[in-house]
Length: 140
Image (cartoon, rainbow, N blue to C red; front, side, top):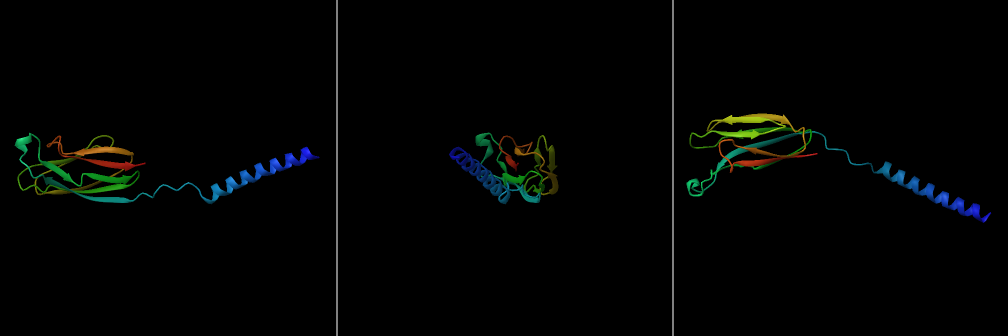
């Protein structure tokens, strides 16, 4: 009789623990991924304040130089070439996005794409390397 009582207590404890775990899991499921949304950015070319001939590097940059999105978001970029001189700039991202927007001075373009792949991707101006670059971060 004592052995049966011990067995019943152990089985009851195990069943209670499993029921508690299941109830906690059902009450607090894993958080859902965020719903896709449109992320809108205004990206400008900037001229950094130094004489590039002294350091043998281009003196151009992007502002902002970091863009963020969640996987599945639509990313809309308004790209402005703010140069006072007749100088072209590109907004270029390689695979998997394969974007290359080439614009003349004092012009702008708007384009969009779906952030379908998570990771960190460099965007750059193909004319002003290695200085003119930024990072697109797509969270998974």
